[in-house]
Length: 365
Image 1 (cartoon, one colour):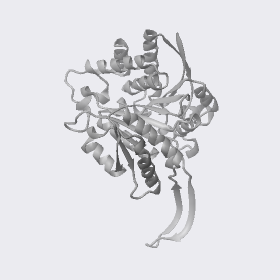
Image 2 (image 1 turned 90 degrees about the vertical axis):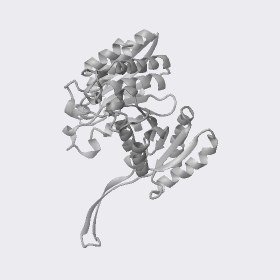
Image 3 (image 1 turned 30 degrees about the vertical axis):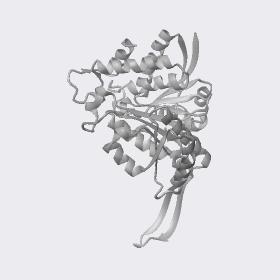
Image 4 (image 1 turned 120 degrees about the vertical axis):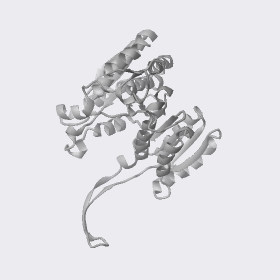
């Protein structure tokens, strides 16, 4: 029997609830596929600040590095809003990505036909978009700080304290993520859209130059470009025309949430953060910690369950087990089971809580 080591970071808010559901699903599918898991629970985020005074203990990073993959619930919440910026819960995510060398974030936005009524768009066609987001560069990792200036502005106001965050990308960082985008497009519908702000940003112009130089190596992929503001509009206007979107860290962060909402609910969206072959990938739902519904049973576990499916596929190579989970989720939706976020105007649906949705998926594996 194959044995895999999985680091589980439940995190904050609804994180512990949804990761518990995903672990149960992995255990069930593992029993059917001859796979065994060794789960090790670790602290990161707000709960780690409460226990250790920092968002990412070194012990957690050590466990993650020694694992085959990492399953993350969510981190953060208003409880820690007043914490020093360098110690905020979200710094745990940046630390995990940097510490594990995770530079490629995959965020699929898939419209399940059963949830079309939950989409804010009317008469929407099928949506199947993969957003490939650069994860360890750009403005989130650039130089930042504050300075003071006595300079006077044009209206006579004193400039005063100035805060700055620097967007910076190297050829190496851009090239490796663009190659990921081209490769994923080759395995899908062979269309790649680079989203940037090349009419304003020098860093975006470098992205375009490198994309144009790489395109001849992938003659089967149609490459086009969109400014990020236009892309945000076109995702609403013509979402079914997109295949793979590749973009920078900040733009990908924003666009993937938008793409997620138009598919029906952000509670349905998994994600994978990957690095070089042989390094453990990290898998998490896109929805965040949602502390306002923590403990109420309203959390949708499907995004985390689908993240576990991605974990099986991309880090462990257990494609049959991954397919089994995805089919169970589809069958559960087809049978009408709905958590509060995806009820929409569906008739004859079965309203369930977190446990009820988890049980329904488990019954269909």
